[in-house]
Length: 315
Image (tube, rainbow, N blue to C red; front, side):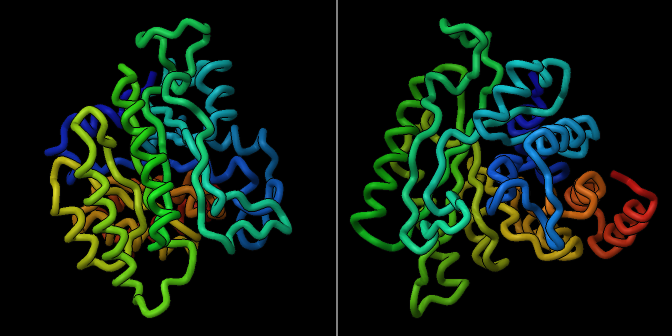
């Protein structure tokens, strides 16, 4: 099984020189978040087989360090195909979902406070081939759990309680770890600026971590980049907890590269981009470009090289 993400996390002193890049392929599996197979602007239609092939192609290309998948896609690639047995790329699985990202056409869930629900129990998250699962048989050893806090006492208590229960269970599951994604509120926070919302999320992350013992803590955090000042404050607060950025809605390739640059120069140690990759006109080319930015390349110069790569038909 690919170990590249674990190798980097186990050498925290080197993360600044070579940050972790995870392709958040879990977002694509529901059809690019909206509709069936719809991704990008203008819309490019892909079916599930196309999404699975994109995961294979990105892993084979090698610019990414990890590939995050839904449970169904993880079963195909990690278990049925044993794809990661001979790949250095680390497979990861989403272990829960949220109503906020459950977006069927004509659905209205996004207008209500997001609520998490478990999709894979930690005891089953190793994706073994046999019913009796030993640690050495795990095909996946790292899973995502995501939460959204909305500054609402009762709802946030339920969300935090569900996460803490999950984290405690992971702590009792040898061989399996998790990382935590904390989304900004999905409902309007009237009177709060973007910076204030970032501060609210940062404070919530720190407080949540204070209630977990070492073996229960996530290996890293995934959250939204707000402002450089707030991001630096969060990244510098606890150097034992690497902070990574989600990509969010795609703008354009130039914006994607600049976001990755801002994340890293302000103390972040990981990026976990999904839509910014699979909605790009050339997912392979943007991943190569992001790798260059993470490794210290100037975003403007890398963008020009990216355009040349695309024009050459680079994936």
